[in-house]
Image 1 (cartoon, rainbow, N blue to C red):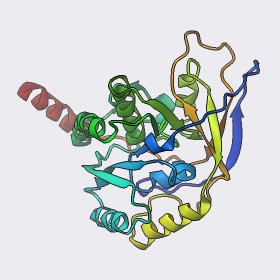
Image 2 (cartoon, helix red, strand yellow; image 1 turned 90 degrees about the horizontal axis):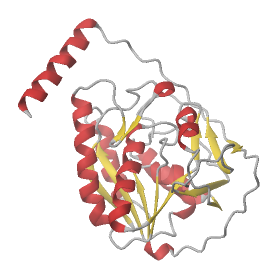
Image 3 (cartoon, helix red, strand yellow; image 1 turned 180 degrees about the horizontal axis):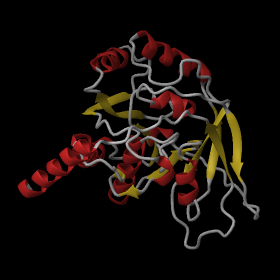
Image 4 (cartoon, one colour; image 1 turned 120 degrees about the horizontal axis):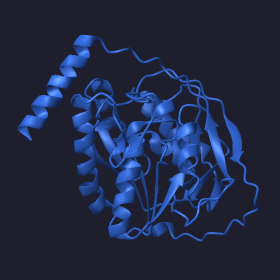
Length: 290
């Protein structure tokens, strides 16, 4: 999801190369006990089309966009017309933190990404992390495998990373395996390369379901809430990497497929002195009242 910013997408199949050969294990997953967890409506078809019809449930976390009521209503209509009956929406409000940070200097934290401007959107972002854990704990009970966003947020979205973090926290309690997507962009690649050194590189690859993707995409477009590139054509394949740390980081990195997307990174407006002062005052008042 892009939240209205222009993007230029360019499908490329790339690999992060390793100097050591690694045998890729064959996985036999029971999709009857598997779930997809995504941040926004349309994320499920952009990053997980190959398994939409396989999993037992699709969980979408956010629904309402206060700055764009048309999207909120369009999403409600789209979900009511959804051709698959295994989808549920948690109905949370988006925080509005998208593109808050310079992603060339981004810092992962417990709740997702460290937000630079501690304003109202930041407060909602923190609150959403707590609510996500509570709701997903119930939604994912009994799941053996959970497919979700990757730790770098695909093309670089703060709420994608937050959803991954919530799923990661609950893994200890619920005991499922985490599989994340293999999409990345020029915006998020620096964060990706900083995170993969000590990660498990076991993965499997499936053909994307372009037919189902197009059917659902057209529903979102008809209802005015499609947030991605208008001329998007999905990749022919996508891979899912099993999330987990290894004891010792590999000196030369891992070997797994990456679907690269080139996005146009919008320039961020500099905050005025007044803007920064207002943010500091709000932060001071919030700290005094807590």
